[in-house]
Image (cartoon, rainbow, N blue to C red):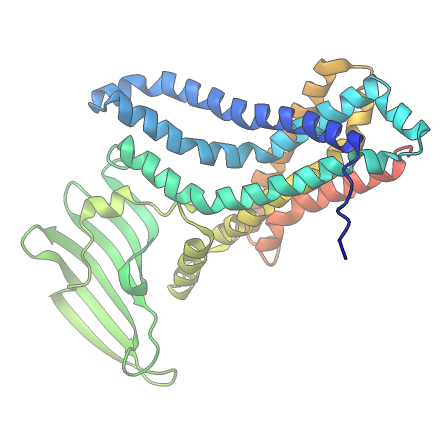
Length: 365
């Protein structure tokens, strides 16, 4: 018995081709434009770093996945608006309806393409941290980033340890208000909290810690503490420049790494609400591709009179509004206004989904 494969309608092929042409043009054109502008501004800096042309070119090649990831929702919106807008202006939507094909059926290939774009976004989100790291390595961004001081931050170190640091001065080799937390599993590998008022770095002896206390928690009901005037932590191997040049940027961490960093930060008593929103956005942004297609398809039927200029204005305006909503929701989640904070990352999607549902319900099928 042979299984009958679903028949691809010529209209589906036509709509899909039109969508993907605009999608790939937008998804590659915007990042290349941003790269050209950035390269123009930073060429002098790269020459001062004695970087070879090959390193500069490769560095920007590795920057492409991150740029494409950010522009995917906008690319889906532009492709949807221009594809459906062109079909509407040329009366092809009307002809399809006269043939008994509803608006929902005409736009089905676009929704399917948006799902593929969402999957592409999830895949890019997994590789972007590695490509960003390679970009920074080739262009020596970490070496020339920041100054000599850094204040009030958390640092995820080796062996599951988390540093809470009041301040670091790389030029002096000093650290103040240090707290080191390691989550243990029991008496054989206990949880401990090591705090020190001051730390000094020397090349021969590493970090010397002064005026501190060590709290050890073998289990949940007992603990003991040791106060010390000075000492050394042999596991504190990061030199001052390491603490300056490797900030924990969520964009440089994969989903699993960021989730582990959040857990470690929360164990150390830090506020991880903003990072929890960033973690949820790693999933919410790719899903936006589907939501934005549901919103853009009925919206595109209003562009028939304004032409391409109107389509561009609608697409850009919607993109700007959506990006503003993402930043606003991130700020709201970081302040703890919405609980849990992860919900804030999905608020723009929810609002656009509701608006898209209303527009779809009002479209003449």
